[in-house]
Length: 414
Image (cartoon, rainbow, N blue to C red; front, side, top):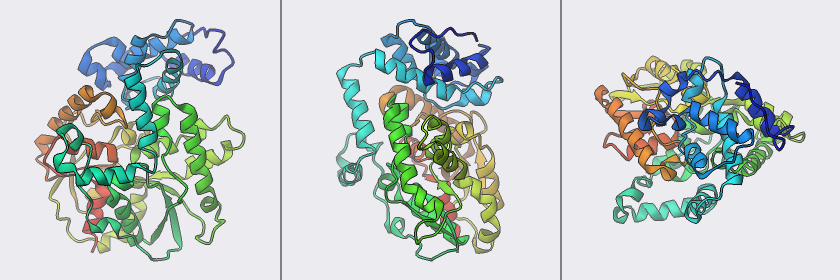
């Protein structure tokens, strides 16, 4: 696709990157077949091809409008279109560029601005954990819409962190909302790794991976989060502390993993962080990527899983952004779990998509219910996934337990 950048974008990082991405696009439309919002709304402007065209127009000098903003807002950034695209168009990067430019040119209503500010600062700030505890105490009294966002309090097992010193060590990002919403995911990860002879370390100064601010069109804030994490991790990456040197940075939230794996690209323009960011990205592994290495140590310690039939929902950030497909269910089956995928539409987004479920509740709930309908024929006793957002979102629409797969593996260890 030929693009003639307007003078204000020529020579800029955003303009040059967007132009390079657009050059790959042949406007074939294969992506519309796998775009969740296009399937729901049937509007070309609410599919990847239409959004690409709108971004192209703005880059060429056309005015950005409130309509442009709304269509970009409706994108889940699920990146299913990237998996489908025969030309390798990096749509996720393009839509982030487009959102940032449009955000600078189109004034949002005050209510929208306030909600977005609360999401950026509230979910990543120190007040989120106490606010979540307060919400859990008041959960029976909350309206149904809020109750969906507040999980019940975790049990005592969530506080059990292994204390053994191991020669092999990995870093783990706790996440911004996961420690308050589902702390057992992190402690279960540490226990499973400990059972395989690997010690899990946490850098106290690390926080949100940067995805939240980036996808809310706050690129500078997202980059600041990335730099802060690199600074917090670097001593452990280099082995400069008494805790030793880590061999990998492990992500048990696939959305965070997708972002951290792209630190090298995001900070490539920063001379102070480019090399460090590239190394961080190279070291980053989704927890499922470690499973083949863990199998020999875990198999002798496993008892028969007690969870019955499982159905796995692969998050978009795992199967499309990280391009990791088939690993979780295959390796869990090797460990004795009965796990299946939905018979249809396992590739589609569940509607969580970070803050999307808050900002686009109607579309989000439609996608959630569609996903649960696709999972239901498996008649599973438990739904498993690999991202806190997906887990909490799906749980709001079903009585079937929805859990992270590592929690079940942890419980099956003798």
